[in-house]
Length: 222
Image 1: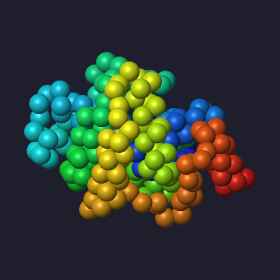
Image 2: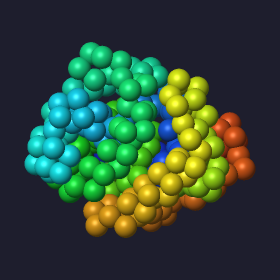
Image 3: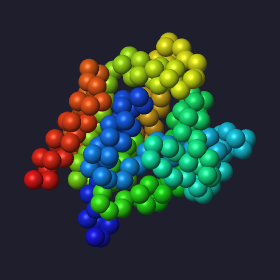
Image 4: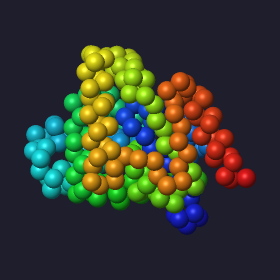
């Protein structure tokens, strides 16, 4: 099957909207491959922090992004043969990822890596610009959103469950700052892609969100 004919479902949205959980479950239900594009920025951030790379050096950060040795193995995220699934969820890594994602050279360096995940029988890709920039001709585009309070609560639970310390007020401030950076950046600002279905998950659980996405996909593939 030509790559252009491999179906893609994109699920975009702000931090802690639930897009990762929903995308992973949808991929499992359909037997599709899964791409967590946000993890690629977090992996770049983690690599930069570990190497002591100047976080204002766009060229150096882009070079790191271009040469990432990473893979998604089941529910694990592997960087140079190390399972970094928990390490990339630390707040310092997330905040750094949000900052370096504003650099055009970093975003450009990761495009080819992201496109490479499109393999038969299909792909579910989550992020912030999957439907608007990376896969603009996706079969189904979804934009997940939720109130900042709901997202902070989810993020708090996620961090506590993973053994990280967390403060709800700090998380609210961080999420609002990330939303501001993501929506106002010059390159690929966070916004629903053209033709995307918008799904507010503030009062939904993951199962309900997954069911809705699957219903939309079934509707366009009849």
